[in-house]
Image (tube, rainbow over all chains, first blue to last red):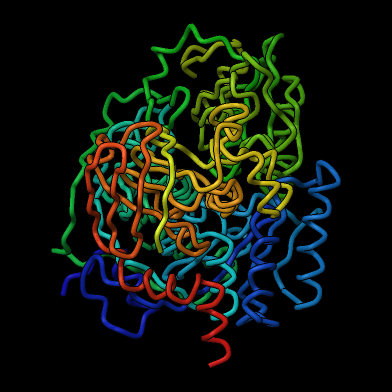
Length: 419
Length: 164
C-alpha cells in the first residue's frame, strides 16, 4: 500500500502493519521529553505507576526552560523536583543552567532528534521536529510517564492533509508568514486530529530552521504533526549536529490524502495573526495603525540564529521606538554565543533592545515580559490566546522576526520594507 | 458511569490558557488548580460552579498547550464530564488518561442550553436532557480508550503492564 509520510514514519517504529487512518498502533519511541511545568506531573505519575526506572536513561530529555531562571519559590521547588529525579535516575539529558535552551531549539541542536524518529514530548510544540522528518507530537504528562516507563506509546494513525507551496517568495516573506497564512486559510481546527504534510518547490528550497518554524505551528491548526520529507538538506543538518546513519524519507507517490491545499506565495505580504486566535491572519499592511507597547523576538518558533539574523538586518543602525520594550531572547546558549560572535547582540544592544537569557518566559506569560491591562505586543511566538502573555485585557499579535524588528523601530506594526 | 449535572456553556476554541493560565502552573495539586479553573476565560468563573456540574463546549475544546493541568483543574473544580462539538487532540487523550469523561456530539451541541439538567451514560454515550426531554446519542468511545477507562486510567494500565 502507498503510505503517506505520517504512515511511513509510524511504520518504521511499529511491529504491526500500518494499514489505514483510524487504526490504533503501538510504536517504539526514540526520545521522550518533558519540561519544568510538565515533568513534575510525569514524575508523580511514574511513581503511581510503580515504575522505579525509565526504559532508557539516554532517551529521556528533561529541559527546564519555562520558568527558568526560576521566577519564584514555587517554580524553584518544581525544578528541584525535576533535578532530584534526574540525578536519582542518572538521566543523561537534563538541562537547567547555562546549558538550558528553549527545548524545541535545543534538542535538534544537540542532535537528539532527527529523521525517522518518533518523539513524544509533554509540550504541544514537540511537533517542531517534523521539520526534520520526525514523527513528533505533544502528549500530556501521564502519557509521557507511560512512554518513559514502557519505551512505547499508542497512536491513532492520522489522515493527512497535503500542503503544496509554490511560487516566488518576496525577500521580506519567510517560513513564519507561510505557516500563519496556512492557519488563516484552514483555521485553528483545520487539521484537527490530522497530519499536515508539506511539499512543493518553496518547501524544497527552504532551510531546516524555516521548516522547523512551520512544523512548530502545526498544532496551531489542531494538527497532530507537521511533517517535512527528510531530504539531502535534512541529512546534512542531522550530520552537522552529530547524528549518523539517517536516511532520506519521502511519502510514497500515490499515497492518499484527505485534502490538498495549494498555496501560491507569489506576491504574498508578511502575515500577522491578530488577537485572540492564530487564525485571525491579515497582511501586515492592513495593521499599520496598531501601536504596540512591547515586541518579543524569541521562542521555539522564532528564536533561532536565522531569526536573529533576519531581525538584526532590519534593526541595524536604528533605535527601538521610545515607548516600546523590545525583548530579544536567543533560544539556546549556542545561538546566544553565535549571535555574540556575529555581532548581532551588539546591533540589538546598540538599538536599546533588552537581551535576555534563553527562556520560554513571556511566550506563555510565565515571566520576563508580562503585559498589563490594555497593552499590545507583537511577538514572534506561536500563540495569541486571550491573556496568554499576561492580563486578560492585553493583546498579542504574531509575526515574523523581520516584522518584529520593523515594529520595534516604529512602535507600530510595520512592513519591514518601510525601514 | 452515570452522571447528572447542570450545564455551563462555553464557546468555540476554548484554549488551555483559558482553562488554567500559565501563572497557576507552579503546582500539580488538583484542589489548587481547581480553584483557578477557567480563570483565563473570566475572572472568578469558578464561583458559579457546583460540584457535579457539566461543561458543554463548542469546537476544538482544549486547544493549545499539552498541559495536563487543564483536565486536572476541571476535575479539581468538581466537574466530571465535558461535552463538546469537538475536542483538541492532546486534550482528548489527557482527559481520558485522567478519568475526565469527554463526549463529542458535533452540531447537536446547539440542542443543549445553559442551566439544562443532564443525565449522562458515559459508556453507552447517551445524554438525556431532563429539562427538554430530548435524548442525544453519541458515537461509542474507541475500544482502546474503553480499555484505559476500564482499568481506571492510564496509570493503572501502565502499572499492570509493568507488573505483567
